[in-house]
Length: 336
Image (cartoon, rainbow, N blue to C red):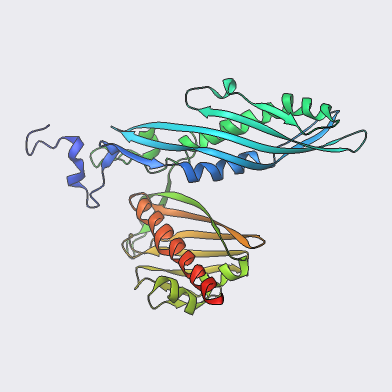
C-alpha cells in the first residue's frame, strides 16, 4: 500500500468527483445471465439454412439453463459462462413439400471449450425427412456455431461497456483501455452553457428484456397514463403522452420528453436522471411485443453516462419494472 499522500493509482478514486472505482482495481462482478438469455435468443432464433434437400430454420430457444457473468480485477475482464441449450427447428422437404420438426441440443457451452469443439446434437421427430436432419447436422451446425461466436463476441464487448473506466491521470479512452475490439463506448457531447465547445461524456447502452403478465395495450397505458404512472411510482407525475410532451417522475428525479408513441407497440423518450450532467439525455426505446396474455417488453436506453450505468439499470429494474408488476398483481387481485 502506498504511503499517505503519494497518490497510488489504486486509490485514484479519491481524486474523482463521482468516487468511482476506476479501472475496477477492486474485484467487481456483473451478472450476465438475463442479458445472455436474450442475446442467445436473438442470435439463434430465425437462423435458416437451405440446400438441395430443402430448407430448415431454428424456430425456438426452448431451454437455456445455466449462467454467465463478467468479473473485473486490476483492469482485466474475466468471463464465466456455462449453458445447456435446447433449440427447436422446423423444415420443409423441397421435392415433396413435407414438413418436419426436430431439436438441437448444446449440452455444454462454456469457457472451457472452444466453440468449434462444443458438442452440438441434432435430432428429428419420428418419420421420414432424414434429408433435413442431415442438412441441419452439416450446414445447420455451422450456422449455429457462428451464432454462438456472435453471442460470445457480444458478451465480451457489448455487455462489458463501461466496466473499465479511464483514470484521471491518463484520460485514456474507455475502449482503448479495455483493449477490446468491437463496439466502442459512445461519447456524447455536452454543451458548456452558451459556449460552442463541448466536452465528451463516455456513455453506454443498456438493454433489458422483461415479461409481464399483461396484454400489450394494458402495459402501454401504464407508461402513458398519469394516474397509472402515479400509482406505480407512488409520486406525483407529469405525463403528457404525445409527441413533444413532457415527462417528470419520482419527485423530479427523472424527467424527459416523449418523441414517438405507437399505441400498444412502441414508446421513444428523451430521458435523464437529475444527477446526470446538465442537459444530457439518454434515448429510451420501449418495444411492446404482444404474446396473448403476456407482453415482452424490450428496453433500449442509449446514451447513459458510464458512471451512472448501474444506477440507471437499477432505476428501471426496481422503480419501474418491479413496481409495475406489483400494480398489475393488485389490479388482478381486485378483479377476482
